[in-house]
Length: 132
Image (cartoon, rainbow, N blue to C red; front, side, top):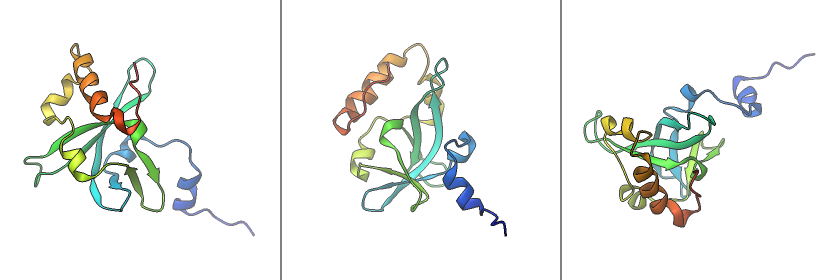
């Protein structure tokens, strides 16, 4: 008798995920507190490597929402939680470099080194190395 895999079983075996499926995935800290969700990904054009998970939290109905580029290496997927876990608390994230939605387009533009340096200087104590 052939056992049909459930969608959850099939997904657990997948090594790849579509970017569209990452968007909206919740982000928790180690104590299980929901911190927000992944809103988007910042991908290096030449290598295809994900550099930042753009995390969204705060605001109400999109008003006052802040977007935090978090080095992708800090986000650890936890299948039991159905989301990503970071070794950061809410206060640390609230103090992190953040941008309005319209500012995100400049993140990878000509002044990207300023953004990148600011982000990696902030998150450096938590372990991520600059990608450049």
